[in-house]
Image 1 (cartoon, rainbow, N blue to C red):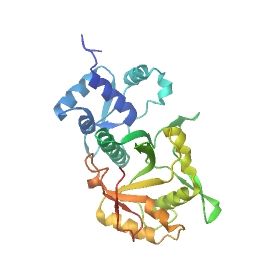
Image 2 (image 1 turned 45 degrees about the vertical axis):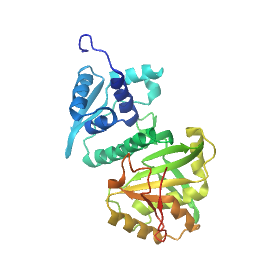
Image 3 (image 1 turned 180 degrees about the vertical axis):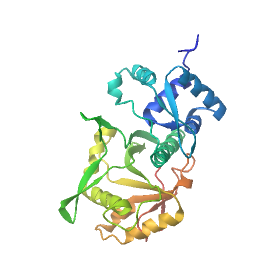
Image 4 (image 1 turned 120 degrees about the vertical axis):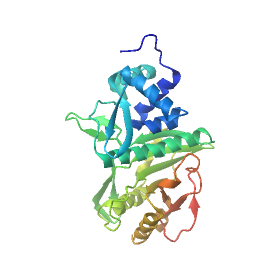
Length: 294
């Protein structure tokens, strides 16, 4: 039940809106986005949970609560946006207990938070961010993921390469829009098998870059045609990053220039103060330049 006389603050509403956008947020992520201290964040989260606007749960090996919208919170968000709950594509789901899934999910949100805080203090605009889980619920209950796509192998037109990025987003500066695909590497996938793992991901993007199928996102972000795109891969260590670049060097792909549009950086370099800086290395092992996404 609501506490007597309690009114949602503007910041409470922002928290609910972000829980809708991000789906799951840890307490520290909510604090990073909205509160000056973790203690203040916990206090407001407890109040919102007590009024059934949100729920929280724990996952083994993650030492903090993770929050998501409750039905009442989803209804409030829908009313704020002037739509029905069904229009939000919000579905009440089981709270995931798998550590590896949840850790990866929160890492993607860490990137998104860094991106959000960075563009707020820059001349760059974020035109939109489409996460991996966004999609339509099917009759059998499964979600058809919007950004899952395929491309025909340029060397073998009978072969389709399917892939789902962790996210797709677009940035605009000086009225020029750029398209980005995000991959958060867990450090566990094989780097040597071209039929799965990292190299299959790179193979997809190289063919996607050549095919022009990425132009589908111009309608989503409401912008002029993209000239190219960048695939951003965030990995666990500098050693693994260089091993990735070395693995890509063994791929025979023409034009080889396409490898320079696949950019890599390590987790520790991703922050609101650094994400737009010159921290990105291309997948081309012979390219010694550092790149910036801003």
